[in-house]
Image 1: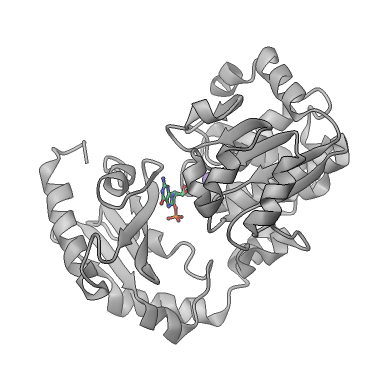
Image 2: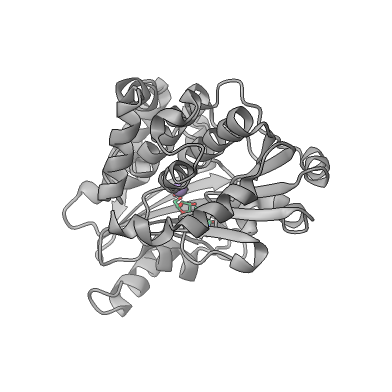
Length: 352
Ligand code: 5GP
Ligand code: MN
């Protein structure tokens, strides 16, 4: 665990301890279209701050949690209304950003979060955080997930020290977020990730129950849409970029909701000659883009150069705007084909 020791110094831990403080109102902000890591870390920290430190905590996010994660969110109500979020921030002593590296990832909440007068703490694993927006930053892109980072930070605190001292709900939420961000231990897994999992399971986390909720409880429409995507919508360019476009008609036809397509973008990487996978989902006047790449190919560079986005080296996202990037939705395939040729032919091998 040498990597962990480099940031879990007593002085950093003491700084975190005093920043978290005790009592009073705290706001936790997470990114738009919240996923398991964002929600898991927020719920885990809220529970800890409430139970162990007597704080009154609200989680703010422009979007509701997806129904696929209802087992995790339970009766937790996200504050999705910006006026309500603004009045909470006015009386809060601390704002904590989880699982995003920039307030821009919070959509329309960006200005009110950035302008909040309280102290600001960042705990995140995305590269290149906007450090100047925060009073205290824990940014570790080398870790699997924000949930893993938060776990190591929490157990470094004197009032925690071990997984069993965390509230039960925090343990379950941290395990869940780490599981979804690693795609069930398939990506970005380090010895520290396995150690975290092991310690949480020793402390009583029921992994099988979590896996059952995550991967054996999908609505039928997800599997039907997945089959259709793989058989009819997936194309592979000569350069080895696989892409599929879920336009509004397809989304409507299957009745797809946020969360139903989680993991779809990873599937084409199972093909030997595919080096990148891009999934487009139409959302009104734009497409939401998810990109994944094999080692040696940068999904993050693809998204920052062509999709107004970014993320992790091998897992990133962004958008394609209509009509700024393409004249209409029907031109999306042509756009991806052109980008594929440019991006995968230009860069020398090993630097894609
Ligand atoms: P997903 O494809 O699962 O939506 O996102 C993959 C990764 O890329 C996540 O870490 C997510 O936070 C990040 N990401 C998704 N969309 C965007 C975006 O528009 N901008 C940036 N900077 N990151 C994004
Ligand atoms: Mn994450």
